[in-house]
Image 1 (cartoon, rainbow, N blue to C red):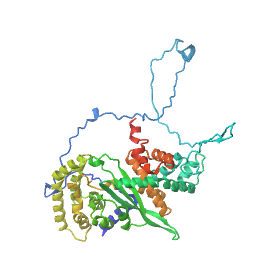
Image 2 (image 1 turned 60 degrees about the horizontal axis):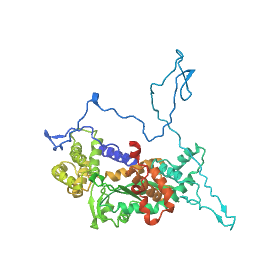
Image 3 (image 1 turned 180 degrees about the vertical axis):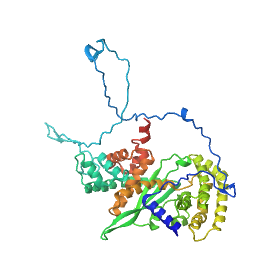
Image 4 (image 1 turned 45 degrees about the vertical axis):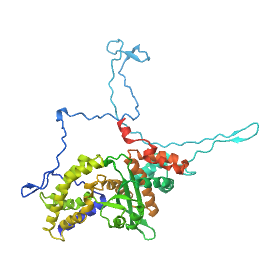
Length: 491
């Protein structure tokens, strides 16, 4: 009973605050009757320099930052002057000083962000002959007749959906710069921006679901329930296309959807036109999708591993326990994956069949054997049963190099949602959930493609109102370009 309560506590903490590290501290092979449980994969040799000859870390400040130079001249007399009319007399003897070098050091400084007002002036010109009047058209604005420019709108969106700052807190931050913007005004900007983004998010959906493989996951979000004086639990779903681990360098993408509950009808509607591989957890709502025959199920070894980790943690990390033995066996599978990440599917399939195949066969036999030695009602039996009942979908990755060993691509895409959930606590309505899904889609996809999400959204907001709808794909992150984070860091 105590172990069961410990497990329940661990799982509730994870559900509320997100996953903690599940790294095994002890890499030793667990032993059974004095023999290794499995043959560890041969490691790739890596030369480790000794401390004395280790390369020094480059601590230079980023080259892309603007430089402000301040020159500190030593005390001099006015007996002599250089070509720039600077005094250069020696205070010791009165002789002329000449420049023999510089010592330069750099200091990183922060300049607070600032607001500015752009005045759009359109002169009216009248012809003195025919009295015709001419005036340039007014530039379009992201929000018609709105005071917010694309840079300000992008900052509001990224502050809320990337940096997880609630709007009332952002209002106070702006107030320190002497600009008073009510949170309700910013909420209106968020809604109007999302309407502008609708065709772009639809293009992102089409691209994401055109992939051969999609990762899917969902997470709960609190939503105000009008008229009931409390919140209800909605869901944010994410679908990720990212085949870079299999050597496919097509751009990655993440598409989010909101639903007011977790009924299976929602992912079934989201994936109604999708055909391919769906990598996901064991949520029962996907059952009808797999039953259609157009979607292949691929399960997640991270989910299969997690109940063993919970048991291992609740038992105080006892060496040699069944839970630890299971974790060590699964770790061997992951070690193989680390060595073939980025390789093409055919290479991954061949390596997996040759090296992971025997380990998987041994693991299945061992799990079956252990299941016969523990109580069927125990948490350990449930952990073993989870893997054995999903064995076909868990091992499908062995024979298909496009499939990943786990669904971590989707889980990573929901980390920002979990952080936001702990900061702004709840969404104001179902419509607010739909707005969040749309903006998360653009922010996360920009990040996956190495873009600064604020620079990307600013570029989109500056263009989208006048952009032809039949060329909306030009505004997707990998087409619009923008400020790449890695380029700035490497500069």
